[in-house]
Image 1 (spheres, helix red, strand yellow):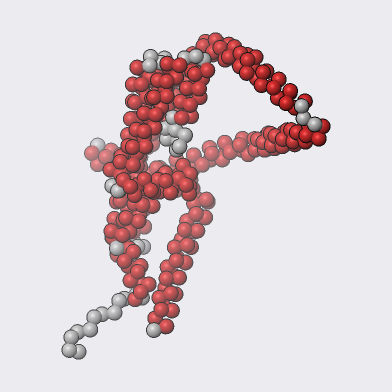
Image 2 (tube, one colour):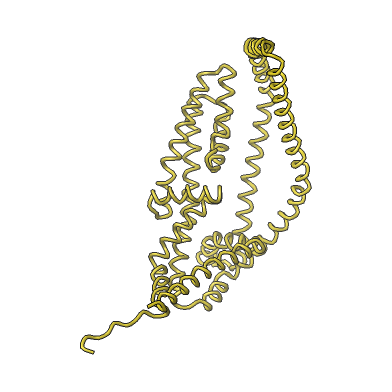
Amino acid sequence: MNSIFLHRFLRALLVVAIIVVTCVAFVWLAQITYPFLIAIVLAFLFNPIVQILEKRFSMPRSLAVILTMVSAVAILAGLITLFVAELVAGANYLSKHVPNQVNTLVGYAENFFMYTVLPFYNELTAMFESLDLGQQETILENIQNAGTTVATSVGNFIEGFFANIPSIIGWFPNAATVIVFSLLATFFISKDWDKLKNRFTTYIPAKAKNSGKSVYADLRKALFGFLRAQATLISLTAITILIGLLILRVEYAVTIALVMGLVDIVPYLGTGVIFIPWIAYEFLAGESSLAVGLTVLFVVTIVQRQVLEPKILSSSIGLDPLATLVALFIGFQLFGFLGLIVGPVVLVLFNTFERVGVFGDVFQYIWWGSEPPRPTEKGS
């Protein structure tokens, strides 16, 4: 009996070791070969379009890949150009209106200093002079220590910022190299997609191949479902903000709504990066009605995002809404923004492995070894 449990423990230890070594090896290889991993993902995303061009329009595979990649780059360049054009238009608008707004803020700051800061300063001075000499020295010493700490922190920040400038500048050639290698690898991988897939599957056992097909199908559904869900959420956020800004009669409502829709991807911060400073400024500038309207629109946007995100993700990926919400939260806590993608993907993998019987096979191996014992016949 002790021998049986020892063998089970050793097999469980072997399974854990294989999982850990595989994860460590994947992370190590990803750090070295990440341009080619990016290329695999891009080829995977381009493959449906390439297949449509190849089969429906009888286009050579190489030409279909080139046309798809050129179209993707052109669309990306067009979006960047449109975004830059909107930024230039917004900058021109700000250059005309910012001086008046700055004068308003300066006037508010002067009034705040004259009628709030100075009386408070005089009260503090009177209280300080009423203290004995020892208490005054203690307060001055604490103030000096606080000033030294702040000055040291600011100095360290500035020193670190300028020390990182060479590495930031050196990042651009590396980024260009990664982009070139990724695009070239995307072309070759996409061109030989079927050949590479068939060659890869020849080295996989039949049982693992069947399970792998299910995992591949579910992951594909999850990836495209996640992209579709994010596009839906961004569109809903942009439309909601656009309607609200049009009701509030805000200029450049379309541009602001588009920018906020894209910013909404940032977790926890989202549209608050733009809404909160904007609302604070309108309150300080005396535009209370606009500030209240923006506050209501901000709250509506947050509630809409929080309510719809788990539902849309779960319906697009095919997961339970509560499980999706838990996966999103845990993923973000562990991996930050990347965890919003990793969490649902891990959940999809877990559900797929359970559905195709991977966990059952692993448990069977740990408990019985390579094969479970056959039941004995009656009367034997």
